[in-house]
Amino acid sequence: MNDQGKTLECTPSLLALTILSCVEKDLAGARQTLKIIARETQRLGGHNATDAELEEGLSRFLSFEKETALFRQLCLFYDALWYNLLLPKLIDKTRRVPSDSIEAYRATVRQKSMELLATAEYLPEEWRKWGTEAYSTDMQADFNFYMHGVVPPSQRDEFDLILNFTRTRGNGHYPEMLAWLHMRTREIIGLVDKKEHLLTHATLFNSQARFTTELIEYFMSNVVPIPE
Image 1 (tube, rainbow, N blue to C red):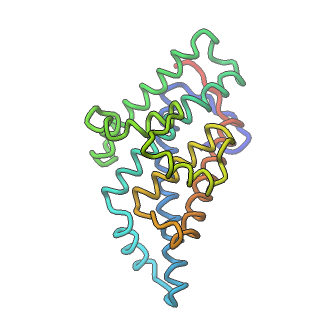
Image 2: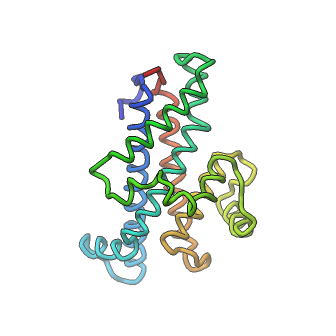
Image 3: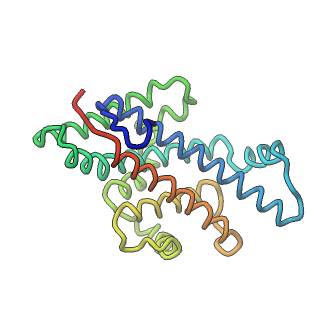
């Protein structure tokens, strides 16, 4: 990222890099938060775990399959966040993209993001397949929520509990997107016992919300979308 207070002019290609960076940084933050949670759990049990023990425990807690699922979830989240929230606000604020080109510009950023992800050879192959048809069906409900706010009837009760827990009900689509991301993160990593893991849930959600809010504040203050 650029230094705070300095504007960064971003073409769609550079914005695609920025979005992928958001996903990777958020995933790294989730891993670090889970290590902190594991350390506190060990400490409460009377044992101060070493870094090696925490890494070993984290690898069992967050397997490659789970990390892959979380990576895809974050891709959907940030895709919708940029497409629906950040890009429209930034374009309206900076006025560097013609008003009659806004929809085409957003579509171009999304296309560049998909292309970048598919060709980022440093990522595992399973992660680069996020945007392909083979995975679209399993993630359709997530896409429908992040993009359109649609909650499937089968997940309404659980999501109602999450909205109450995170106190995001009625605060707008972005806070509810964070609540949905938190719900799906818990499901992916297996933290579904609400009473036993209440502190863990709070730590995880606060970390997710703080990270994303800081990103939004940075981008709204520093990024200027411009044509390619």
